[in-house]
Amino acid sequence: MSVSILIKVTFASLITTINILFNLKTKTLKKDKVSVITLGCSKNVVDSENLITQLRGNDYEVQHDTDEEANIVIVNTCGFIDLAKEESINTILHYSQVKSEGDIDKLYVTGCLSQRYRDDLKLEIPEVDDWFGTVELPLLLNKLNADYKHELIGERLTVTPQHYAYMKISEGCNRTCSFCAIPLMRGKHISKPIEALVKEAKNLAKNGIKEIMLIAQELTYYGLDLYKKRALSELLEELVKVDGIEWIRLHYAYPSKFPVEIFDTMAKHEKICNYIDMPLQHANDAVLERMRRQITQAETKEIVKIAREKVPDITFRTTILVGFPGETDEEFQDLCDFVQEMQFNRLGVFQYSHEEDTRAYDLKDDIAPEVKADRANRIMEIQRKISEEKNYEKIGSRLKVLIDRKEGDFFYGRTESDSPEVDNEVIISALNQYARIGDFVNVRVTGALDYDLEAEIII
Image (cartoon, rainbow, N blue to C red):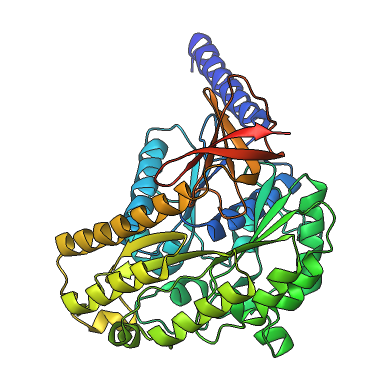
């Protein structure tokens, strides 16, 4: 080999070595930035908060629901109904494309959809680096070379506004509702000990949280596994002692075998909002039986009656499911009559989604989509009129309101009758009035809309 060729080869090798070293150094110096994208319900929000807390405890830079400058994306999915599954899949596909274009390095998927359809999704979306189920947080952390820090349990960083947080008191569900796939994705009911939940509430209060919303797949089942009895009232008695927490709100309370002593506890303590979220799903006895809800319309009415007797100003929120297989016009009309009679304060509607591996999947999904949509609209029109009438009755009244946010020329807040994102709001002009986000203010109601109130701040 001539000297000139040798010099060229040596120089080329030197350049290659420099480039390799430069790239290695660049990658070494580049700090991973993780984006956690949360889809679905408030229980998923809590799961994402726990994930973020663990990652930050491992010195990761983490952001939520934005992918700006992130090189690692984790999608926390929902697999509850068709629309939720579609949103989750579309989000995964979006970030798969982003990864293919080289804008992120790694893509991981966790949550309900991943738990339920992991094997199929692996084949369909190979761009995803790995898939994790609903209770595989330690495995996900290990994939990111992060340790699961037990000392961080109960010290959750929240992604909600700084004055309220969701608190999951149990995981999973032992109910056998024929339409529901949640037990397939979340497993059996597991309660958290009262002591751990009190510690978590104290940590939330220390960080400025004023309102906690107790959530679970089945709130009133709480304690049966740990204490061999329903222990929600005992938990509430301990949580009301936590300094700094001013509102405690109850979500997702199953009506069958409902422990009515909860209403005594609610009436006893000012901190417990006079509010119950009790998903009833239907009112017709034949449909309730096909749904395997373990309750009748008469029993449901009795629970509502007891609640209103024990807590006269209680706000009832419920959820209705229309279009269940075999739902006749007469059965649906029975539901409409029930909603009209019961005059619930808050109500939401789902359209039945035919979920494989559930008991209802063996039934024929025989209600046309347009009929399901029409029935949902009819229920909501009944509820709209109820809500409007109840709101007009409040004009001139004085209410305590928690300020959630400011948008444009208005503050938006909530009374104890309203949970964030799903319920009504109180709208206050910000042109000549001032309030701080996260503060309680007293207001006088000056106007009423279908679902919201207009008000002015009073001293």
